[in-house]
Length: 417
Ligand code: ATP
Ligand code: MG
Image (cartoon, rainbow, N blue to C red; front, side, top):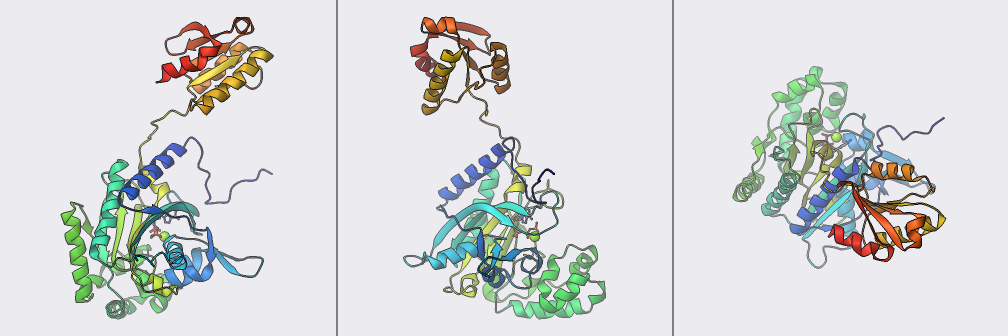
């Protein structure tokens, strides 16, 4: 039986990789310009880290995490998101010691046991950016502006930024009470999951995708009408700064997030082209996440972008052809050895070149050269080799000439530059 990959786990093949490299390259460029530094975090963490940050009663922690006991009996989890790990690293290595403000980004795979479909996988990649240690609303505006600059740079001008506020620890309980009372009256219309959520985590109901629940939610009170003056003030300033920086946004008073740690500002970047899985990025402020995982009470704000969804949107960005610039066809043992040396010289000098390893006929080697779509073919024949000469064939112009073997490298370089 042929062994296949696990459902929801994808191979990203060489034919698809250019889009990925392009997206990562632009993200690094844009983020570094905004003063962000890259960090790498482990794939596995103690389960507790996610339970305490994302929240015990969220979908991710309740039913989506890949959690298992390792050989020492510790409960470990394949990270379902990066913010908690980045915050853990920031605390663990006292990155706040000299100056609490830190701008970090991370690129890597996440794992969630969800139902696989287009734009939704069990291993998926995220690009994460976080500003730790800044409570000021300028930081909120800055991460969103950076995100939208990324979309602009990858050619996705139609991605829309939606924002909302979720209030803070002080004002959200009031809203939660109001919402619970409202939903309790409509409990019969809620799906079984939401019936349970009404007890455990009523705010989660606002995120339910079931049609009957969505109808109920449509009439629910809005968090915005319950937040305290300080949260309202923060949100007004965020919007003000977005305007100052000319970043268009849309207010979405019904937006909530699937993780419990968010406070105040939340946002999503949506693409009109993606259908059901239309959120390409989600983020927000989490002012007590650090405290909740045992660190100092340091605020933060950031976002996570789903790379697969951006790849689906970005038009084919094949800037550089993958094909080797030059193919060396060799005839006979001696010639093959010279080809082997020559191709290595070219690689060392940064010139993409290929040879044939099998000692095939000239015709077969030319066919390979065609398959690679090489601009030039260098033919090393037994006769020419005796005279220290090789044939350089221009595949585009369909002309060829004899050149000296010793000068071949210089000649090739001359044609490239
Ligand atoms: P969704 O509502 O699409 O499930 P989410 O609210 O779970 O998203 P986050 O956990 O905030 O999203 O993750 C941020 C981004 O990561 C999403 O906007 C999306 O682009 C991407 N993402 C999340 N889950 C998946 C998945 N299972 N497969 C692919 N991409 C995902
Ligand atoms: Mg989700």
